[in-house]
Image 1 (spheres, rainbow, N blue to C red):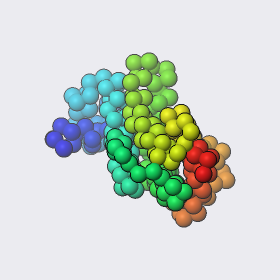
Image 2: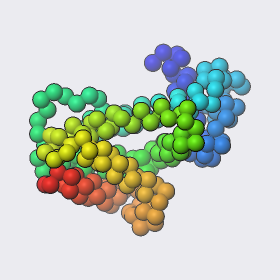
Image 3: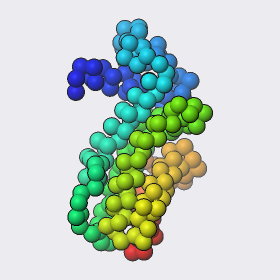
Length: 208
């Protein structure tokens, strides 16, 4: 990273924590300066407007999410050409990997998950922020490729459905009623429960 990129990463990481704790109303340039322990005016110097700040936050969220996926050997880049087909065992391994990432986002990555949803809701009311939705297209491309390799009948549509279902599962466990009945995040029971849910979804989409 360049010095500028490192500074923006520090500022956006601070912004993520502020959003997770207090929602979008807690996000101000002054508050980010304070949380990042930077001199007053630093955030404004790098990210002049609120829109620029939010867009940088979403970019940083996507960057850190990709790092989590790569850590668990889940695809993050363009699908490879002539990739091998996936069988039932592969789908089980994929479900376990997705569950590991989801459990991480419910624990050590919880602030990022909360900030991500807050930014997306902000875009509903501010059309100029709709461009941040583009950060989610990469996951859909990968999901379509995985569903193609798994023999899904309509992989483009079902790949998009897979991402939507998994995102809904995360939302339910994070802030929905699922948080009341699901196993406590961070343990083997949580990962097993999430893995079973994702495995059921994959097998339903592929007819396995």
